Length: 322
Image: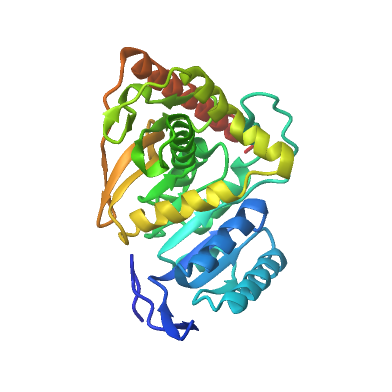
């Protein structure tokens, strides 16, 4: 059976009289919560893979989401077939998406994404253990995403692990700049790197509109809007869902070699890891840092220091709970 990164599917479904072929053989998804549901719907709607294997805390949860996604498949004649599995059943996938979340109440009024620091450690370790030796792409959505990405990579030993947080931050930033400059989003080039959280670094000095440097007069307002956007969404809907799903689709296309181009993703290292600009060519990433002012460089160093300290907290917690 054909397998491997970017393996083409050999069958599909009829849509509008033409045969639709999914570009990827199999994608796995772990997590049947709010974000997992949005990711599953996005993958089926996009017809991204021939098979979508769904795992969750229980096989019953996985089966429920698979059934719901299958209803969507049949309604729109998508080529993507959802089915439930255990996490260990994802080893045959071209890519696996980690959207697991522990059952906890986030009491953080600020630095909200850090609220799941210790709670989400256990399920991430469980899935990483089940996928030890997996040679496909892993995209981590679980917050705090930069730390969970590093943790997953360390426990699993997987070499192609990325966090999608800075991807979503960058998309939001470009939209806000586009609205301010009254131009299409495609005209804006800019990056948000570092932590997916309060220590995010906006590379304002390297932001361009139609290829020309752009420094909005209300840059502080854009920063505030970027920081407040997740809370405003969550306050109205209960959870941010659609944005992460879109960030996953965009990152999958680049990391699996279906398209070349830039993505802002968290990359784990042995001594740290945070969001950074990557340029993918045939699925291979290259770090392409923008020019940065001394202040932006200092912000990035502060974000890195914050994440290192938080990861040390995880390590200490694990040692005391063994």
